[in-house]
Image 1 (cartoon, helix red, strand yellow):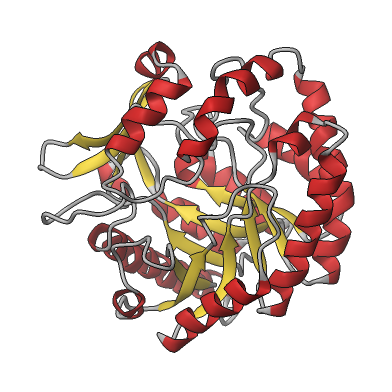
Image 2 (cartoon, rainbow, N blue to C red; image 1 turned 180 degrees about the horizontal axis):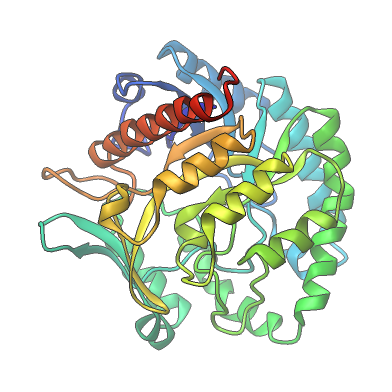
Length: 364
């Protein structure tokens, strides 16, 4: 297992690589060229510059999060083959700088949704929050404007201003696509890309839908154990896997996360784990919260233990953190609470490993 942290390069982050390096147990970062639009080939020159920036700080860059999939691929349009070719070229370029894991998503139009990016908790900290009826009352344009107004000047991946004009048209387009047809579009992409991912030694790790339920009539397909089983059945390659995001999957009170972690880790199909906690207010309303089990509704130790006991050896990052101690940063991606989360998760991992040795007598 390698503990890493999300980092936005080239001046798009309030957190520095030097600060990340000082977090105990941190080996590297998951990063991206977040200013590029979906469908562009990631230039080798920029990638080597990115790798040099991270390496100069004494950290590794083995995970990219993420290379966005062009909407034409998701729609199944004839132009998708061109964008798939570009995606494959980007994989080749990522291989050139030693990338081992690529987190991506196949969510149509909206990568993620929240009703508030700076909801105040009782202790004075601020978190991202989701209230289903409030989200339904907003159209994507007004939601995007609201979200970007609270982004403190940083980019919001998935909510880029240049996408706003097209969002309403894209949502209308998807009303005519059934879920079964959407699965076919996913399989078409996987059949084309996974052989190259295997050739370039890059494990593909799809991120679950966030939130994991239907929104604006869009198809949502990576939401629970049954859907993940079907997704994994579409391609047998060990390079075809998932990002196990406890915040996204845990937003649904119906998901048994320790059981899911055990099942998919034992199959070697969890390549990346985003670990954080959530506090449910109702079936479809929640607040993000501190990582500790007692701060939310997820048993973080049981999840970490399930990963550890079932052979997970990929990358873990503390996912979204609170804004605490007066920090001003990109929502969810400040330094202080994520550093606290990283050390907490590292402690859980150590405890799980030592408990495993006690139970089995097998060295870590």
